[in-house]
Image (cartoon, rainbow, N blue to C red; front, side, top):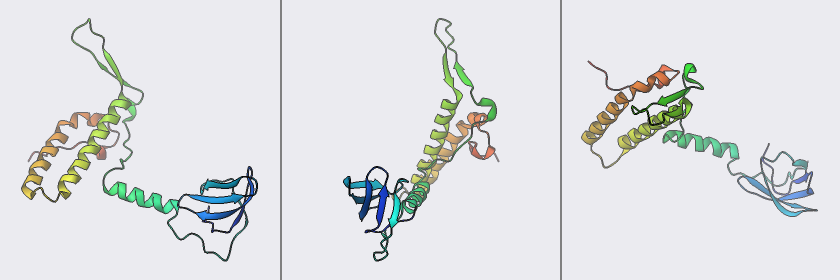
Length: 178
């Protein structure tokens, strides 16, 4: 929906005719004949434009779509958005059974999807930790290298779980032997 300017006449099925009095970031403040002053989200599809106010320019702030794009960009830059990582097809709907050696104890059954989700979260958090270490202003380069090598060894310890991933590009990779 296009951005509407203050003074535009609109109609709402419940509140009747009204005039936009304020245009906020995500909502319009509208004075309705029947309902008085009501705030309605800009994404509301119930509003019908009766008459645009051509004298007043539309709100010049960021649109919701633009704010969403900026947020996605920033979150992606700081590793806060995790990519969709597919579970291998053969594991979907499966369970893991943790069987104690003692036959008197009950086994624990865990859905593989739940376990896989935890593994992916662990990997994503390790990546954020790497980014934070690499961009840290106080840690020396030598300390960064040492911490990076430690994280690489952690990735190496997690390669056992690569069997769960559908795509090789998502695998854990430790240090390569020379």
